[in-house]
Amino acid sequence: MTLDAKLDRIVARAEELRAALAQGVAGDAYVKSAKELSELGPLVARVIELRAAERGAGEAETLLADPEMHDMAEAELQGLRGRIAGLAQEIRIALLPKDEADERSAILEVRPAAGGEEAALFAAKLFGMYQRYAEQRRWRFEILEYSDTGLDGLKEGIAEITGRGVFARLKYESGVHRVQRVPATESQGRTHTSTVTVAVLPEAEEVDVQIDESDLRVDVYRASGAGGQHVNKTESAVRITHLPSGIAVAMQEEKSQHKNRAKAMKILRARLYEQQRAKLHASRAADRRSQVGTGDRSERIRTYNFPQGRVSDHRIGLTLYKIDRVMQGELDEFIDALTAEDEAARLSVEE
Image 1 (tube, rainbow, N blue to C red):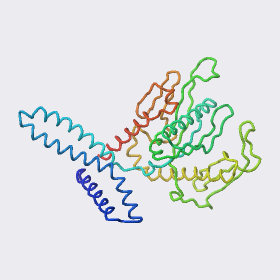
Image 2: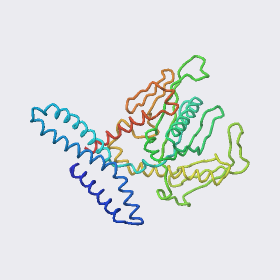
Image 3: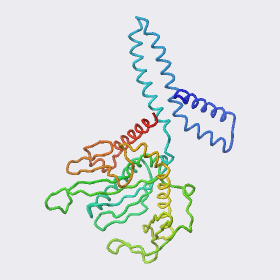
Image 4: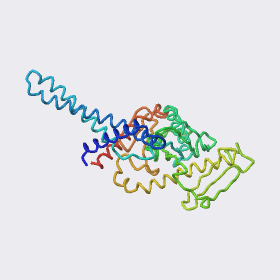
């Protein structure tokens, strides 16, 4: 099917839905039709704009033969051709298959990797960076687990980020983040390199992942804290192991065993859902493993060089010399560029 034929069908479908709603469909049929029409609305508006621009270009072309109108028609035609190309590109992007998880909230996991305490300190900085980014986007950022080293470093940080389109914006953050800086304890002024792993998982509902209670081993124990602080005298900490997959989640942030179990199940569900998605999309990912990368946590994606004040994303070759602002949560320039690169890669596969 040609692109024009596909667009004609989309416009016709929108007209069908409008007619159905005008005739007074009710109940589930109304909700379903209204939702589909709302999703089609922006695309249909672009198609209408494209058709109008194409008609305008056709009219301008007929005026080129008139000596008195030639210059004006040529200028108008040039502008319309640029508009047509831009609208066609927007429409092709809108027609790309959607990742069903893009509109979901997400689970963020940050852990130090290589580099000891320096890695733990940077992990805490990264966790704070994402919290500030969430605040700027007006998303809800709830800390599910925050285990510190006692020296301002982070052993493990897990947060639930709630809002529309969270996963679509943050999914490219999964991977290894490298930091190069001079530690405060470095007497020779030498730059040290450390790494931190970040995982961003789409939040899963109970309907997405069926978990059989018989597949779970639940261990409860007393919570512990750095230096003996925050130690709970009751067995409130929970570790849940999903036996078929071997995935284990430990939670001790809350004083209530019930709350810790609920949080652990939320994280377990997200990890199992991501595992299912990875298997489902493995073949497609192999076809479009572009500069944006796979999102795997073993892949180094970005370097934060403090002495030079720069942040470099290795997947798209983008370097910004504003590390302080990036650490304050100004991530949109990276995320927009990564999104555009991914769209371009998928378009090339579609074509």
